Length: 277
Ligand SMILES: Nc1ncnc2c1ncn2[C@@H]1O[C@H](COP(=O)(O)OP(=O)(O)OP(=O)(O)O)[C@@H](O)[C@H]1O
Ligand SMILES: [Mg+2]
Image (tube, rainbow, N blue to C red):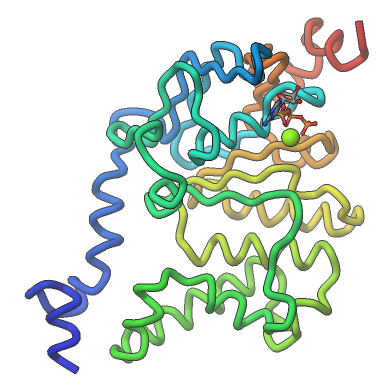
C-alpha cells in the first residue's frame, strides 16, 4: 500500500499530497488580479465567413454570465474556441492570468478546469444516477479512493452534495436511462460538477425541458453561481431572466451589447437584431 502511495506522489506522502495534482491546477489558475476568462480580438473564419469577428469578452470569477444572440451569432463557436475544439485565426484567450488556452489541447483545457455541457445529454443510460456521478470523478481520485478511508468519505460527501444540488437525491439508484429529459440534463451537470471545474460552459441547457424543469434548472444555476463561474448560452428568455446578472448579446461574431437584462432588452440595436431588419 505505502509503496503505491509513494510512487503515485513521487516521494511525498500524507493526505495533503494526495490532492497534489488538483492543488497545482488551482495554483496555476490565477484569478487574483483579473478575470477568469479573457477573450480578446478573437476571429474565426469558415471559408472566408467570420463566425467570430474580433470578439472581446471578459468574465470575472464567480460570475453567472448569460450569452444571448440570434441563430448563427457565434455563441457555440465561442465555446468551441474556449474549449480548444476550434482554433481561431487570430486573437487571445486566457483562463485566469496565466493559462493560454490557444496553446492547449482539448483534454488539457478540460483538465485545467473548464467543463462543457453540450445540448444533448450524454449520460451512461444503463448505470444508476449514483454510478454516473462516481464514474465522472477524476480518475486519479477514483484510484486513490480505495486507498484512503478519509477520501472515501470526502467523495461520498461530494456525491451526496451533488445529488442534492441536481435534485436527484431521491433517485440515486435509478438507472439513468429511466430519467426524464430534464433529469438527464441535471445528471450531466452533476457529472461536470464532480470534476470540480472552475468554469462551466453550458450551451442551451434548458432546450426541450418542461416549464417546471426549466424553473428548477434556474434554481440550480443560481445556487452554483459564486462557487463556480458559469457561462450560459440560452434562447429561452424567461430562463435567462430568472438567472441573469450580466447579459452579453452576440451578433455576427461580435459583442453587440452587454449589461443588466432590462438594459440589454431595451437596447435599440438588440431589439432590431431580434425583431428582424
Ligand atoms: N464548422 C463550421 N463550418 C462552417 N461554418 C460554421 C461551422 N461552425 C459554425 N459555422 C457557422 O458559423 C456561424 C456561427 O455558428 P454558431 O454555431 O457559433 O452560432 P450560434 O450563435 O451558436 O447559433 P445557434 O443559436 O443557432 O446555436 C453560423 O453561420 C454557422 O453556420
Ligand atoms: Mg449554438
